[in-house]
Every structure is written in structure tokens, then in C-alpha cells.
Length: 375
Ligand code: SF4
Ligand code: SF4
Image (cartoon, rainbow, N blue to C red):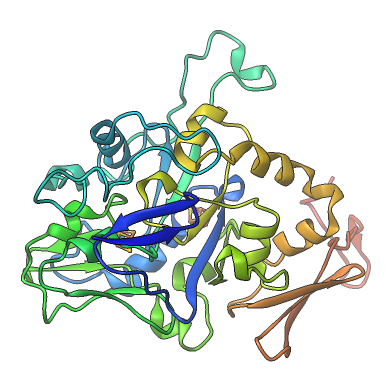
């Protein structure tokens, strides 16, 4: 085992291979507060990449309702149970990662789902936590809660799938950090399926090999955002590149939101994989639940997000989400406009900080018709 630095847990940790960061690291931010669980992302991915034989059950992108939704069944609680309670008081993580908690002879603490665990991807959809008493649903703040968690492969800096593969079939591209699986080398041992804590590698029984999300790399190479991003109805997603915190660059949108404003957090950072999909946590869910899921900085992230309306930089940058199909690696605010540009500074798009309000008259004299959809 090598010693590597994991900035998400603030310390060195053990990993199967020495630290070797890519030239650029693909990353994404999902604003959970905006997701409506329409599953358009799920279908965009399904129809693009997993419509073949043996792929019927696969959802490289899925959206589940927390706390009772899971795909596959109980993927997170099973592992949390196996890992057991771990301390993290706010500084460097004091507990054990999945690599450090592996038993002798294993590379990662993991578990392999049964076939039926994948059979009900919408289990728990819209189920609330807690009991609603008579009339309680009308009280604010609400006494019950749930939220939608959209998930893809995290293209981790320290992928457990890669560490566990005895064939060396999984690799991390040095040019963009995207994690891919070479099906020509794969022999279907499913060690990756067992090791990935997020359960984002899938076994194809027809080919006898495993498969996973490829971050739509043919699109990324063309500077386009992946399918699940550009089709997102809620405009919750933003793709780009993340630096390590010591090299954070304020005009890189992902660096700004993750490192500088610290409003977007990784999913289960305590597992130790340094996942590269970051979430703006839901403002209305219990903090103890969110701290277990996103680490100890949840309170700060939510406070910052709640104040975004009075913060033109943050509000402006958030308005770039879902505004273009292109990857936007640079941004700046100019008075009441937010400008997104490419690496060379060439402008890609410009959005207003405040959308103009258009008031339409009930009677359209230009067309000689009355509108019936306005009061
Ligand atoms: S999320 Fe899972 S499949 Fe994706 S890189 Fe990380 S360990 Fe591998
Ligand atoms: S398309 Fe966007 S809003 Fe709809 S479920 Fe997917 S992430 Fe949520």
C-alpha cells in the first residue's frame, strides 16, 4: 500500500497505488435543491449508452429519494453498517477509510449486491421520513422531509474499482481523470462491483464483463457537457475541472464553488476515494443526516447557499448551471452580467444576473387574440 494525500479528509491515507493526479480532473456540481426527480437525466443516459442486451437493469445515472430510496437496494446503509461509526470532529478525518478498514487479503472494504437488489430503482420514491400528524403537512417548516439524490460515477481520484481489479482493467485517463474500464482485459470477476462504494460499476451477464459511466468522454473531448447534464430539466448540473485546494483558481467555476465558497461537498468523503461529483446539500433536511452523507462542512455550505440571494457573485455563477451545452472552464461577473468563457478567454455565453420580467397583456392587439392562460 502507498501513502497518498486526500484533501477531502485532510490527511494522508493508504491506497493501493502511489499518488498520480491527472493533468486535469473532470468534476461536476449538482445542486440538490433544484432536482425535481423527473429522471430525464436517467433516460438521457439510458438511451445513449445502455440500451443493449445485458444492460437492461443498468442505470449509470440514477436519481433516488433519500432517505428511503436506493439503487441498488441499501447501497449506502449496507456499507455504513459494515464500516461502523467513525469519528470526524471537523479537522482531519479521524476514522478509517474503506481502504484502511479492509480485512486481510482484501484491497477495499466492500460488498456485492444480489441481482434482485437492482430490480426496483425507484423504491422509496417520494417517501417522507417521519410521521405526518393530522394537519401537520400544512405547517411550516415542514415536519417531514425527503430529497432527491442524482448519482453518476464520481470519477474518483482514488477509485476503489481500480484498486480492486486484479486484471488491471480499470484505468484513470491522465488527460482528464475520467475512469474507464477496458472490456478487452476484463474477465468479469466483479471485484470492481464489490469495491465501488457508490455501486457505479455494473456486470453485463451477456458479455461476461463489467461496464461503467464514461462521463460521455467523446463529448468532453469536444468540450461539450455529458448527456445527463445537458438534458437536465432542473438545471441542477455543471461540468468542469477541479484543482487541488492549493491550486484553486477563483475564475474556475468548480474551484470557486468547491474550494473558495465551499458550497458544494463530496458524497461520503469519509470513504476515502476523493469523489469528484460535488453536491450543494438540500437546505431542509436534518443536519445530522447530511453530515453523515457530505461530511462536517454541511452547515457552512448551507449557510452560504442560503445567503446567495444577497451575493451577486455566487447567485450569478449558479445561474450558469444549465445555460449552455458547452463546458465552461472560466467565468467572471461584469456588473449585472455573468460571462462564461473557454480556457483562452473567448466568450461562450453571457447571462443576466436578474432575468427581465415580461408582462403580457391579456389581449394581444398585434395578433388580435385574447390570452386565456394569464389572470
Ligand atoms: S464511483 Fe465507483 S466506479 Fe466510479 S470511479 Fe469511483 S469507485 Fe470507480
Ligand atoms: S434531469 Fe435534472 S432535475 Fe430531472 S431528475 Fe435528473 S438531475 Fe433531477
